[in-house]
Image 1 (cartoon, rainbow, N blue to C red):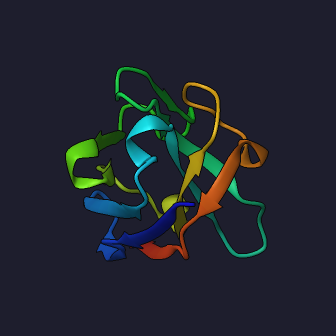
Image 2 (cartoon, rainbow, N blue to C red):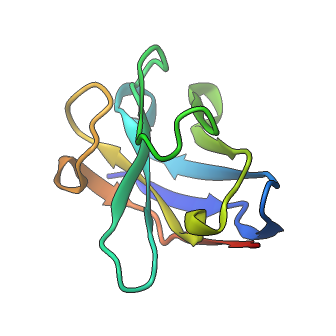
Length: 124
């Protein structure tokens, strides 16, 4: 099993930056891909970014390419999402998750364990 705890959310103005962290427990974290998703009120959960177990492969939603960067530190059992040039439409609850297969999967159903989420609010 893997337990995930997100942190780093908050409120920023458009154009600002935030760095989300995802602390994982469990010895398998370093051997499995992880991803970030987000869910805005009234909308479905959507893919943001994913990274392979070793960090060599990444995958991004078109809406965040060039602005967000996913990374991980397996020695610390922690994943990160650096978010720059934030826009009001980035406002959502952000979740980290781990998958049991694939390289850097982008679908909700491919992920097994989820964190509780952290709120990101971007004002114009």
